[in-house]
Length: 267
Image (cartoon, rainbow, N blue to C red; front, side, top):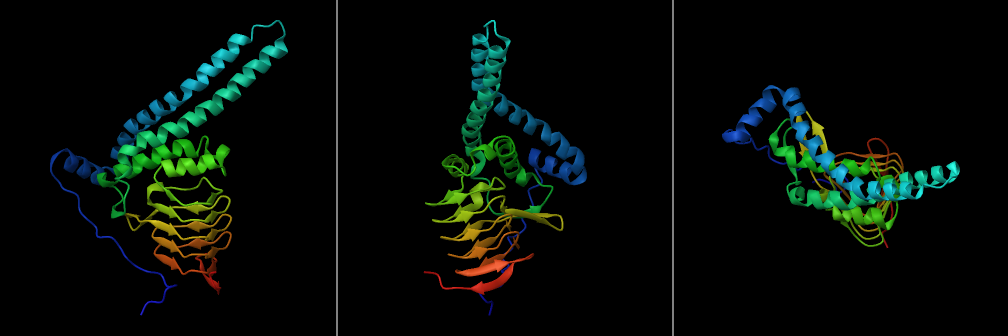
């Protein structure tokens, strides 16, 4: 019988996509010419990203223009100060706007970011790819400035992550938010990584991550897809919890790959 701390396997079935219509033609092109088709697919993705980023910049541009309008004094130093404040303030206004816009835009595809397993080059993963591409707009431009604060918690909830009470998230390295659950009292350490997907032998596997109450994920630790961290468990800094792993309640795990180091009673 499988022990609670052993790795589990619950592979999802591989469903071959239909081969009719536009979807089937795109699928065949993607299999036959993956680099070319992937590159062409990026064009509309970048177009959408540019529209979102440009819209988010509107309040920042307006603030900058307002500040530069005030910079009409004889003193060059004051003019430079007002221009600088305009640039700085515009950056933060645009960042906050981006945090508000991206969850709204991705809401329509969030439900299609779900557990799945199939060939890496497949049109079935386009919603997942688009969702994460837009999420990276926030992650790599502004999210660091609000981490860890209630604003980052709000953002992750708005992106579909299930976040309980008294949760601390001190990292921006989180992907596939709709498939991640953090229960009450969870602490995610600085620069920890949580991914709800991984690739293997030409396949992409998307599977949920669940971190139970009062668990702690240490600094720079990595939690991969299809993992459950039990209540009150501890993952030591720098450890890597491999896919299909269950860490039982109260246990301390560490290493690469992470293994059980100690068990303790959960109060």
